[in-house]
Amino acid sequence: MATSSTLAPPWKTLFEAALDAMLIANNDGVYVEVNAAACGLLDLPRSALLGRRVADFLPPDTNFEAVWQAFMAAGQARGEQQLRLPSGGVKTVEFAATAHIYPNHHLSILRDITDRKRTEAERDALSRQLEQWVISSAEKLQRTEAELRSQQQRIDDILNSLECVVWSVHPETLETIYVNAAVQELYGYSPAAFVASAELWFSCIHPDDVPLLNADIKALQEDVKIDREYRIFRADGTLRWVRGQARLVRDKAGRPLRIDGTTVDISESARLDAERKQAELKLKEHQATQQLILDAIPDLMMRVNREGRILNLISGGEITLYSPIIPEQYRFIYEGFPHDLAEQRMHYIQQALDTGRPQRYEHALELNGQLCHEESRVVPIDETEVLVIVRDITDRKRAEATQADLNQKLKLVNAELNRLATIDGLTEIPNRRSFDQALDLEWQRARRQQKFLSLILCDIDCFKPYNDNYGHLAGDDCLRQVAQVLNGVVQRPGDLAARYGGEEFVLLLPDTALDGAIEIVEKIQAAIAQCRLPHAFSAVAPNITLSFGVVCHRPAVKEHSPRELIHRADLALYQAKARGRNGYVVADSGD
Image (tube, rainbow, N blue to C red; front, side, top):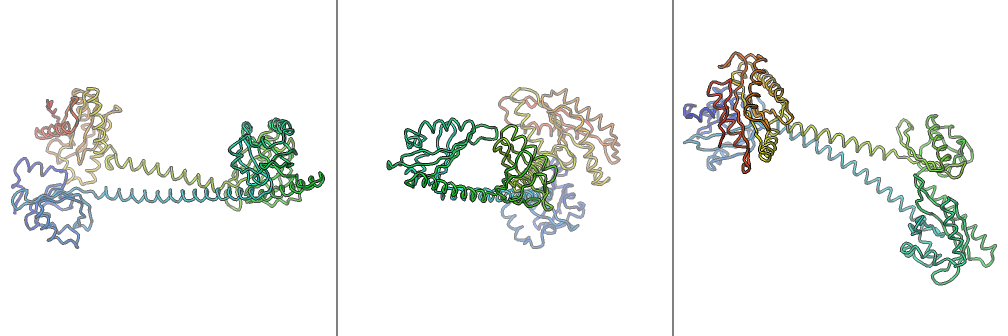
């Protein structure tokens, strides 16, 4: 059986000091040599590991003979593998194996990735959960949008079924915004023709009536409602009498938005009285149709005077009320409403009447034990009355709250994932990945600005005896205290102290010459000495000490990688240990 004596220096030193588990097996798959890291990984002392077979640590359903023969034939293998420990635990490792590193001896290198796999699984599960939340919210929003489109289509169908012409034009250019299908019957032109030409309306009007219509358009700008009878020529040249009603619609800021109106044919009867009767009938039908439209609207609409009396309920809509409003019975806003809501509504009613402008506000209320949200619009009708329109916006508010909650949860998850990816879980200082990223950035900056970049690689002296004798918990606490000392010494924003691996740490010092780097090393030595962390099993001192490898370099323009910088610091650290530890060695210039 081969022993560690078969490994010649410096390979024996590297084998024992390696942070990854290294094991050597013979042709039968029996371990003949292992390093300290392998003992830690497999939770067995060296004496218990030697003589065991590789198959002892593999899952029971593994066909070891087939796997071993395939490996021997291929000469190498790598991948991920689950290991069974004598304690009954299971660990996931990355492995790289090489056959015949020397005759009849085969090397395996293992790295524990159990925590990383668990973190990745938790992250993936959380991401899937968030994705389901987002999909569910998106589906709700799509359903709401579909309902709104369906509602709009119903309104269009109703308006197109009317015999009177319903239209809407721009308040300044008089370009057609909307006209229903009834315009084809009355004017002989299609709705598209009026949308395409703003002049078509006026080209149809009898020349003698054009001045009257121009005067009406000017009166509309003063919020006068127009009710006019005039003559038009159809596309086929026939003359018709029509009755047109119009009003100017303003936006919340009081700016003209559009002119809405209706046009009714009143020219069918030969006699004027008959014509007027027919016009009145058409008007009643139009009003009935308007009521149908109002009844189809889900909003609550009611007329209210300045004193807060509900004059009539125009549309009950889909709003849940505290108590029913009987259209035939007049009542006040304060009757049946919570006092604070009634006060709020009266405030906006007075505001609308005093300013002559529509008011809009939102409020929350509790109905049947549930929190609801409503949007109210108060539109002045004249100097004494307003139209109050109330819309239930509970679903919209809930959707907004749900989306905001999802966004906040996503931010927290991303922040935690970023922290886990860049911070060492044990020492709470930046990890190896964070250091690699910072090194690449600072290397490029130093090369671009031609400034010095210093790197300090340090290692806790005799840490394995410390861990073996004081226990892993004490070892972890020691690593944390050393990490805090290092993190406390580096004060500049660009400086970085990170855990490099195991008991090894690294300090990155941008824009720092060699004397500055050595000063940092001396501060660390003083701080560590002041901590007086006992180490009765150290071959160097009775307390914890560190060894340092220091390198300072100004990258040349053509130097593209900082890897040589790390290599030189590592060699300097190795020399510091070889010289007795508890000191530092400055790497050569590398020129």
